[in-house]
Image 1: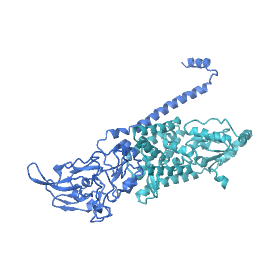
Image 2: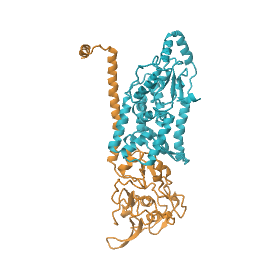
Image 3: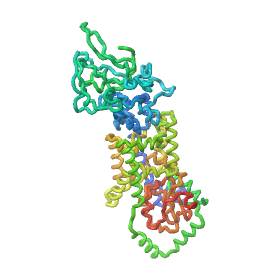
Image 4: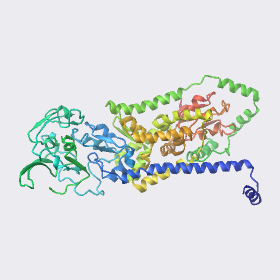
Length: 290
Length: 327
């Protein structure tokens, strides 16, 4: 085959090429092949980042003001400036297990919820790309039920001239996912630190120090009927304990989530049952009183 | 700029995008004379002079300065968050230096293409960074700031050691792939609507890992890259793949800060090409190749200074265009 090629080259092309260039050509071919293989490998690695996005087991709770998931992943520049300004360090950056979502902020509410200790949703202020935003661009759709009826009033500053948070959409919604374990429904009280004496999560207690969140473990409760979620909720009118009638006709107490809920996750963090009876459903919208 | 240098200027831009340097078609008369003189020099004398120069003590002053700068910048990110001193907040993809937005050019590009919506802060930060790196030399970002560069530099040392021991061999790839990768990653962002490149960018990953900790899985990917570079392809990511490097390379085209080669004093030992991350910018040091008596290196040069350190005759020096005339 080689000989045939050489003869062919000799007859058609005017100057016969020296053998050195043949070896060079072979090397160049090999190099090109290797480059294409490795290049393909890099793109394969990069595109495999789509899989975790497509097959996400559960949605992440994103910081306040986050655009919808697809837009958030596109617009987030993965710099973590939102992480840096959060006074309770609620915001974490995702690892490569999140694929395209690597370096994108999320909140693990059960570990550390956003309690708006910063008073002004500073993470939004810190975001350089508008991935977290006070006001969504007009052309972006609003998820059903995500729009807040009114700017939420932050209890910590309800006596200030400007008591509201600059938020127009909720990031999720609290739901009593495990009513069977809820202490209030069972008519039980609660004594002690909400999450045990080793839990590092922090919360701002206005009556303790408005400007300094303290660890939950340093603030034990003693209540006859558990209403920790209501006590801890930073938003005015977002949750309350209501009288409900059980199927057997007996009257019971139960936490009920209302429209102002922004989905911050403080109720989930503070809930003393294990696992939490009340949880945030990330991205969930308000569908009217249940 | 002489006609031959002008020609070389454009040739070097082609090299930035992956072309191999060619023998120059046009060489200035004064350079030709020097080449001619060098050919006439007694070979034994030349060899003796080379030996003498090479026997000089090796120094690493630019490398040390660069490592210090790179570590300092990244440390500033780390302590700004870690100790809450708020000087340089964020990560290398986007940050704020005492309040001023800085946005990495390639990250900005990925976000703009994926998101198709541009906000003012993003534009301001991108503009600031663009001006900054035009002044500071474009790819100097790579060697003076990028934390992956330092890791890869150490991996390269290990690689070269193994090559010397004949345990591994060097496998060069096609440099045109970096341009292809730039275009493909830009298209991927545009089409998929995800910042696909950021998922594997070792610059972003290492920077975030340093500042925020965690991200073990992402660091495993970086480790895999480094292992690949140690055992297979020398500096594979920086040389052949990284679109960030190409972006800053383009910025460096117009940068006044660069390394300048002086033909007359050069003995053509070729030590510089052995240490260089981008030896195609140093093709001018090959005997008979310099198109003028003084030749600035092309835009793909990372201004790392390894060649300046290693040059036994001081023929390679940093310069700021125009400043030497002023002084």
